[in-house]
Length: 220
Ligand code: DX5
Ligand code: ZN
Image (tube, rainbow, N blue to C red; front, side, top):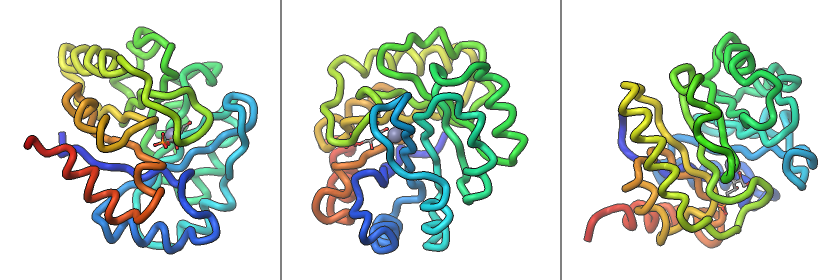
C-alpha cells in the first residue's frame, strides 16, 4: 500500500474558477480529485454531473474519482466513464445489486469503489471487499461539505482495516467528511489511506491548506 494522500473534494471549490482550482491542487502535489455527484434524492442536494466533468477533464492529469450519491447509480455509469473519470464509487445503500454494479464499472475499464453512510454496518460490504479498489467510509451524512466529523468514526475505520488485514486484502480505505488538520491524523492512525477534504482544502489558499494537512499527519 502506498502512503497516505490528501484528496481534494471539488464541491468546496470556486466553481467560477474550476480550471485554476484543479491546477493549484495538482501543483501542491495532489494526484487525485474527488467529485461529489448528488441527485437530490439519495442526498438532499443536486450538485453537478458528467458534462462538467468532461469539461474539467481537459485540465491537468489528476486521477478523477466520482463519488455517486445517487439512487440506482447503475443508470449513469457509462455517462461518467465517457466523461473521463478514472474511478466510480457507488453507495452500497443505493444499488439494487452492488456486486453487479461493481463488475459493470470494472468492465468499463475503471477502478470501482463502494461507499458506506455513517450508520451502515461494515458487514454489508464483507462479500465484495475483495472486488473493489477503494472502500469509502463516510464520516458525515452525505449531503454537503463543511459538516463536522462524526465523533467515534475512527472505530469503524479501525474495524474495517482489521477485517481487510485478516482477509489478506490490500484495499485502500478512503475517509470522507470533516477531514481537517485536527481529524486527519486520527483517521490515518486508524488505517485510512485516502483522506478526502473539501472545505479544509478550498477554503482559503488550496496549496497552503494542503501543505498544512500533510504537516498535521507528521508526528511532532
Ligand atoms: C459530503 C461529500 C464530501 C464533501 C467533503 O456529502 O461526500 O466529499 O465534499 O467536504 P468536507 O471535507 O468539507 O467535509
Ligand atoms: Zn464525497
